[in-house]
Image 1 (cartoon, rainbow, N blue to C red):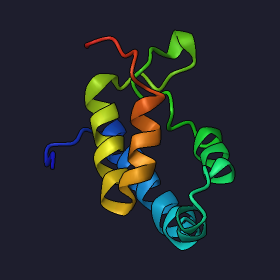
Image 2: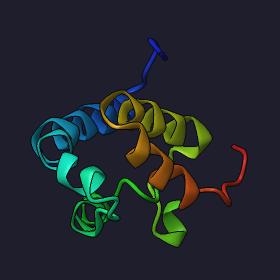
Image 3: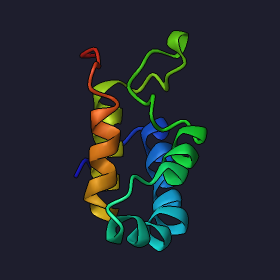
Image 4: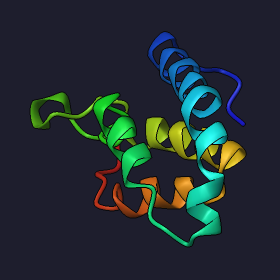
Length: 97
């Protein structure tokens, strides 16, 4: 776990913790039980702007680089490892910054 988060990273982590506590944890189990992709939760995650954390803002991203993506992945994995995999699989072509 990274302990020296800058202001932007702390904001992302805090917002993501709200998403995991309020939307992900309470609603993911039925999807897992049915072996069904949680499209509704992914759409909410996308709408909050977390999917593009690593990318340059010129391309619609958050501009936090691979470190920002690692913060998102770690926070998601603590709540629901399968959802972290969804994030990682859809954020794979990242540029090292």
